[in-house]
Image (cartoon, rainbow, N blue to C red):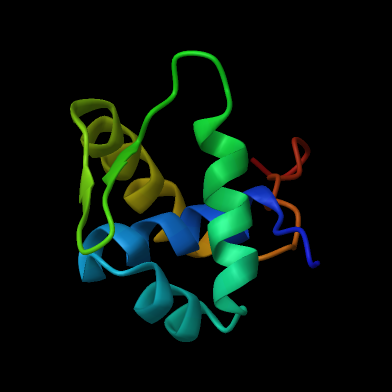
Length: 95
């Protein structure tokens, strides 16, 4: 099973929150639904981390999930953060 890197998971989590559906989020991000579910379970297994409230027919954010979403939207939407290229650093001689 594929393991998502942190940025991929951030994008997945944003889509989960927006769609309210693990299946839809997985399709949007381009990963199989079992992979998305596995990644979310790994985060949920961390002590004190419960970003979503799940039932058979519903998936919603907890208060912690809402805070998590706010931070992740900022990071996942940042063009420099979204690329794998290093951040540009000004040349001290020309700055």
